[in-house]
Length: 453
Ligand code: PFF
Image (tube, rainbow, N blue to C red):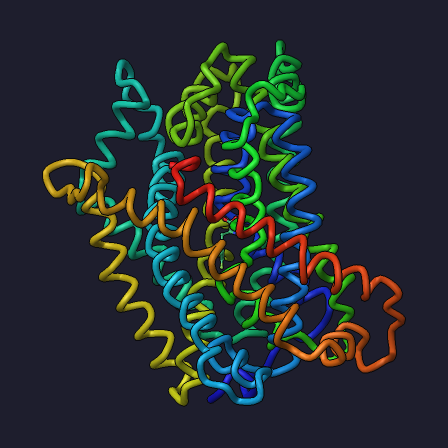
């Protein structure tokens, strides 16, 4: 079965929920709050908003256009739009490699999250008086078997949804989960904002401190805007190939971007006021969610366990719909090459299970693998966050701006002339051809030169 033969999304609402499901994930709830705090709060937020609406959303529209125009997965989509020239499949292949690597890391972190959710439910997360949560996290990270088991459970959950199909699995799940996610995060925000001393957290998150931003913060904002919208690796080309012919791509892209940004900001509002109200240290980086938050929950006068359950459930669900989109992209690559959907999805799961297990056990402890002072996990993180997605994103905008026929793009964005697109020339001639490529090339060059570690 090819990507085209696979039944797609049934409605515009389904498109928005499924793509927002891919976009909203660990990047919004785990990563955004801590890098926003690190690079000057409101200052980072402003730059991030600028990048996400201009560059990220332009890329989203480009990927959707490529996908819907061809009804193919990326490896075949690009050559199809370039008069059959096979060399263009390189963009798609690069995206596939990127998805494959990202999913392995994503599964490992999702496994930690699922484990925290389980420990919140059983109460073991809080049952170890005297043991700091950093020690607890370290203990968990050092137990290879534990890490692998939770990661595999998560992978299997995703596989089941993929096997149910695009509409009955991915779309249906996303239509349920995204609204639930919104309710959960709003509940957490309310709890956080009603704690005494919460205002300091809002100040930390929103007060613009440009002295902390710097070149590194600007580059991090651009990297985050790509990762968070799931663009730059072909996932949105695959989802684009499932978009109904009458869907308004501009409108859907705006909604998806708004949902993505809103959940990231709400995550910051749910986390920082609580962190400050409890007198905790906000600048814990990646450990914010797994080390600081459990301590914050524990200090609540009432509902510690309930809020821990809600938070880690929220994070696990958000991660699930994102991991599914990566899994689906890899599956669509194989089905587009002629494989049946079930064996394709299972094959992806097996390959990911092996790679993610290696990533999980190489993280710390006796089984840690290192090269040039970085663990295997760090290398994968570096490649998938700062190198591969910007390269792939750059090639995508260059392709759409300079290789694909302009009339084909306008035809697709206007639904064959049915919608008026007065903004098209500005979008195409300014954003796609110049601004996005220059911004992405700058990130890449500076990133490689070591601005971003
Ligand atoms: N956008 C997801 C997040 O913010 O967690 C991560 C992601 C999913 C990136 C799918 C790329 C992708 F293709």
